[in-house]
Every structure is written in structure tokens, then in C-alpha cells.
Length: 231
Image: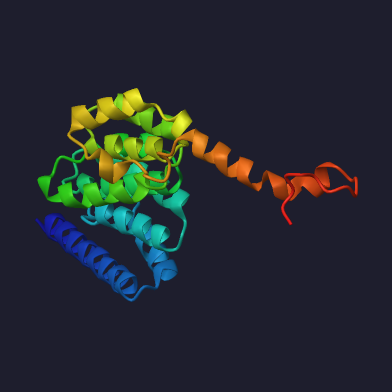
């Protein structure tokens, strides 16, 4: 009985220490003292059966690293959480931050795939905003085309693909693909396709032809004035 009581006392004391340390780390995080918070949280990330804060400390360690600009450090910890605690009830938060980090690192395919692991409907609006923000940074239509092949139900990818295709020079535009996507996803072509790019090439040719007389003196060094040279 005595040994049981002693063990209970030790467990209670240990649990209180972990709680006190976690609160201290959270206070540092709230005060935006992220470097100090990382040190405090790091000590709590080591597994201990008496420590109920391991997963949370690991997440806030990653968040602190992210706030300091250490994206790779944060990513490593988030991946560690997913591996060690696959049943943790806060994995949606983990995947959201992980997706953002992959986007920051221009690993677009990985970022988009991580999004599919987030099942909580409460994240829908945040995910849509996140996608819009980062998809707008992708200039290459082929990258968007491949992403859409992997996620054919994603309207935001289709929308950005049409926008990028519509920004190309008129004679380079894949009009068949643009029209197909507009029809399939119910998009507005007028809103997405740049009107500046939809110009007949002959207008450019006419414009060039009109300025040619100004180049006459550079094309022929002869002092004799050409008949079509402007005065």
C-alpha cells in the first residue's frame, strides 16, 4: 500500500511539472517569443507516459518554428506527429499547416494531396482560401494541367488553369482545352480569359508596318530622301 501511495505521489508531482512547463511554453508562444517557446516545447516532445502534452507540445513546437521562418524544421516535426500519433484528434490542424508549408516550398502536388486528408468540414473555407492564394502563384499552365489530372474534381485548379491559358498570346492559346474546361466546370470565360490576349495577329503586323518609315534612315545610309520617308 505504501509503495502504491508513493507511486501515486510521484505520478501526480510529475504530471504537475509537465502541466506547469506546458503552460510556461504556451505563455511564451502567446507573447510571440517563439525561440524561447521552441526550447520549452522541445523538452515536452519526448514521450513519457506521465506526460499528456506530448502531441500538443510537438504541434506548437512546429508552429513556433514556422513563425520564425524555419519551414523545414516545422515540416519535419509535423511529419513526425503524423507518424507517431496517427490517431491524434488534432491531425486536421497538423495537415493544414503541413499543406501550407508545402505550398510555401513550391511543392504544389504534395500540398494539394495533403489537403485531401483533412476531413473536418470546418476547414472547407480555409482550404479554399489557401488554394486560391497559392494557385495564383503558379504561372506554368502545364503544372496546373497535371494537378487537375490528379484532382479532376477541383474547380479552383480548373479555374486557374483557364486563367493561365487565357493569358497566353492569342496564337498560342489552347482554345479547345479552354472551351472544354469552361463547359465542364461551368466557368465564366469572360472573367478568366484575358481580353488583352485576344487580338488578331494582323493588327500587330499593321502596327509594325506603320512605324517602318521612321526606320528608313537606319536602313539606308544614303543622304537621298526616300519617297515614302516621313518629313
